[in-house]
Length: 332
Image: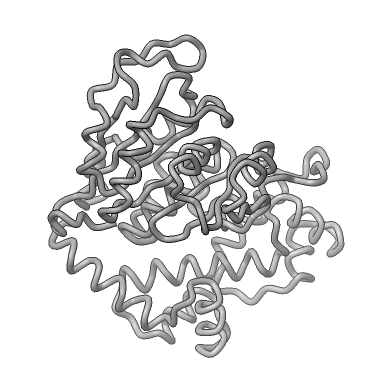
């Protein structure tokens, strides 16, 4: 998200915490946005750690943490991360709610992790929107805030200026999604690599795995996924993939669905689209070359699947990325 104050300046991210804050969710946000990342060769985020309540914050686990900024810093943030809330039934401090409403009104992007959706709900920012939270809290969110369309079984929901994520670890998926929107797929993939994370998990993936994966199969499946990523250009079928994995087609379908929420072929298409996005951002090569490198059998197939995943044609996607890069300026 480009800074509305100076489109050539790095975006400012404010991570706001209260008493009872979970250290894991807070640490995920800090660990992703706060480190200096010169190896990315972009003007990386400026990060502000903000206390929503005065004094040292008593975090979950009785750790006292003194943050360097207060709520006034939210007035200059381009993106605000709310990494959780202590009790869904408790109304957050009014100064925090006012600051979030004020920030949203001037165009800031606000994102929540897990129970942080309740802070946004108390502020009225989710009314009339789709949103999610941890699967154990979705029923409570829907009951207490009926103006919200609660998505019960997704990883995160992006409605533009408001983004909500499910359980704690899905906050990383959501924040990588924000990086991808701000800097493109190539930078997001590099950040994921440094954090040893999956570069991209589809937002529509289920929060919950219904069936357990038999002992030994996750390693086999992981090896197949890595092999598929290395061989995107090759032609694949359910039969050839099951032979590569030494599994029956039925077992492969079931294991893939349990692990990813997708069939093997759907997962392969999403990986091909993700790779094509990076090629469109980082090269000027023609579309037929991108389609070939990403493993699409024809430009028609490439365009159809790309539009299905991004709602844009490959050409429009490339043009939008170039326009955003031009606004960020050299080195951004």
